[in-house]
Amino acid sequence: MNWRRALVLIGPFAWMAVLFLVPFIIVAFISLAQPRIGIPPYEPLMDRDGALNITLENFTLLFEDDLYIQAYWQSLATAGLCALVCLLIGYPMALAIARSRTAIRPVLLMLVILPFWTSFLIRVYAWMGILKEEGLLNSVLMGLGLIAHPLVILNTNVAVYIGIIYSYLPFMILPLYATLERLDPALLEAATDLGAKPWKAFLTVTLPLSWPGILAGWMLVFIPVTGEYVIPDLLGGSDTNMLGKALWDVFAINRDWPTAAALAVVLLVALAVPVGLLHRLQHKIEDAA
Amino acid sequence: MTQKQRLPTVLFSLLTFGYAFLYLPIAVLVAWSFNASRLVTVWGGFSTKWYVQLVHDDRFLAAAGLSLKIAVVSACLSLVLGTLAALALVRYGNFPGRKLFNILIAAPMVMPEIIMGLALLLMFVALEQAIGWPEGRGFTTIVLSHATVSTAYVTVVVRSRLTQLDMSIEEAALDLGARPAKVFWMITLPMLAPALAAGWLLAFTLSLDDVVVTQFVSGPGSTTLPITVFSSIRLGVSPEINALGTIIIGVVASGIILAGWLLRDRK
Image (cartoon, rainbow over all chains, first blue to last red; front, top):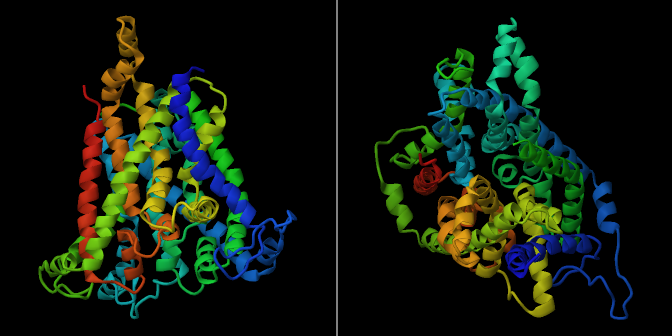
């Protein structure tokens, strides 16, 4: 490697090492520290005489407290459910875009990306106005005579699901589209020529071949949703108990940084498998392309 | 599938339904922002009074100014970092540490923001204790954090353009005796320009929109626009936010359309 290459590499490498790798090592260390009241709110990991001052209590606390165990399962279940619904809504959309005329595909794709970049916060907020008791949805439903009393949706888990599915749908559609667009149309034509009905051709040809896109989309929704904080906070209610919000509360309200760090470590370990899988998958897709 | 074949009706209606789902809340928000009535279910006539109220609200103005400054600086930083990273990943073959490098660059895209925020904050606190810098949390820590997250996105955009780039033009210039540095500035960069512009805009938008990471690494006196909006909508729906949302949607939509136009295939 010559010096010019080294020069190009060292900038981003050093940056990501200091601002990405090192922070995670620090999180791991602080998750082992004793909490205290003060600034910063944790004891040093090493005493003055060099003895280690570490504890596993932050972790045992998490596994003993039902609240955290419940938050863990609720986060995973919410992420799984929302990823599934995103797949069910997103797949036909991606397929329809991939099968549209080449000229209008960029426009259709742009329409998917556009809301994804227009302030996430504002879009979640728009749902508050739609879902609240005296909101748009209830007044429409009551106006149509479908319900007699307003439905309570805002500040329940249903509102959280709607908000998450809405916000993460583009993350599902884009990788699905990327794989569906590359499918060789000749394969489908061959299936149809050999007498397969459109549904059968879809189930036996299109669906199996789009597997990488389904997996990638699933991960892109599932992983961030597990740690989602803004949506449960704004749309959720008292029965909403998710890890992201639990972490923020422990950090900001209890000011218990070691426990917050331990929560982050648990969440990371739980996500390590899907993240690794996604990474390998991306490589496979890149290599195939 | 032949190009002239029309979409099956089922697919077409599902696509329409999907777009309706994506755009209905945005349309409703824009409509509300011009509603004279405070109530979301009553149309009190067309009015721009919420916009007038908004531009006279110092809280939002100061926060917007700070957010814009942070977004510009962090987008420039991540543009440089992401472009260098993309060059290394596309052009340098299998250099030692490539795997780790690739993971480091891409990971912030899939990392839950809440973990990113906590990790960055703990690092800044530890760093301050060790060397006395950065002093407290504020502009600097927010810029550094946003640049770290956005670099991943810039890398993806620049990288995909780099792989499509025709290397023979650069090789021709080198064969004709141009120095590598000159080839880079005169040929590689101009050919990458659309991707660089798009990458910068993405980084800018991401920074302008970030709540979670910012909440960890901001300090007193460094309240960004999303943080102000977040704390205000936690208290409920307010017409001023509808007006602000409409402005943001307008600005971001034009930015994205511009980026798409820059990145389109010139044939």
